[in-house]
Length: 304
Image (cartoon, rainbow, N blue to C red; front, side, top):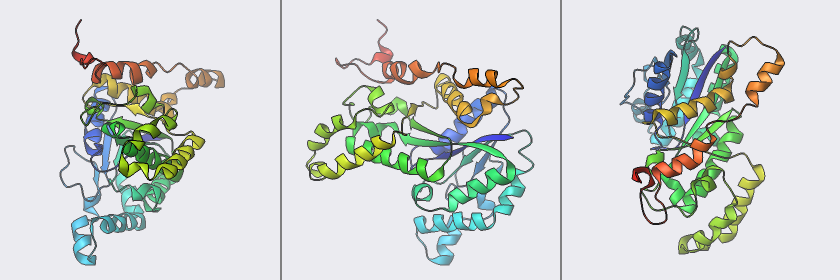
C-alpha cells in the first residue's frame, strides 16, 4: 500500500513551492519521497523530480503543433497522459515499494472540477498501483481579505471536492501573507471553519460591483453551506511546526497513520477518534502569529 498527495490549486497558490518544502520536511522525518511533476508548463523546478511529464509531452510543443493556447494545450496534455497512462505507471512502479509520492499537478483549475482527464488519470493510478492519495488543495490566504474572492475560492474548493471524490484537505497557503492585501473583517476561524456566510453580505454590498449580484451571491453561499463540506487548515511552508501539523492531518485522511499497525478494531478506532491536537494551532495561534490586533500591533512581534 502506497501513500501520497495530489497537490492542486490555482496558479500562484504555491504548489511547486509546497512540493519542494513538503518533500524536504518528509525527508527530515525519515520518509523517502518521490516528487512526480505532472505540470507540462512547469519548466523551472526547484526540486529533483523522480518522474517528469515533460519526458512524455511538452506544452510548448503541443501549442505549436496544434495551434492551441495555454489552457487548451494543458487539456490536451492531460488527455495525452491519460492515453499513455502505461508510461506513467511504468515510471512509478519502481518507486512504490518504499516511497511516499507527491504529485505536482497543473494550476488550470478546470482540470479538476470540469474536465475528467485528470480525475481518470488519478483513478487509474489508484486502482492499478493500490495508492492511497489525499488531494491537497492550496488556496492563497490573502483571498480572505476580499469577500467576493473568498466566496469564489469556496465554490472552487467545493466543486473540486465533489468532482475528484478523494480524501480532501483545503489549505490556506502563504498564511504569513494573509493580511498583505488588507485587514480581515473577522477572526481567522470565521474563514477556516467557513462560518455563517451571511455576515459577508454587508461587506459585499459596500462594493458597487458586487452589490448588483446580491441575490446570486446569497444563493451561492446557501449552496456552499448546504453541502457543509468545505473548511480550511493553514500553512506557512517555511514553518516546520505548521508543515508538521498539516502532515498529521493528511496522514489521518489517507490512512498513513494506520500503516504498519496490526491491532484490533478497537485500537484503530482509538486512533481514528483521537483528539486533534493541531486544532488550536490551526486557528488561535496562527492568528496571534501572523495577524494584527485591533490596535494595529503585530501580535507575532509583540514581546510584551
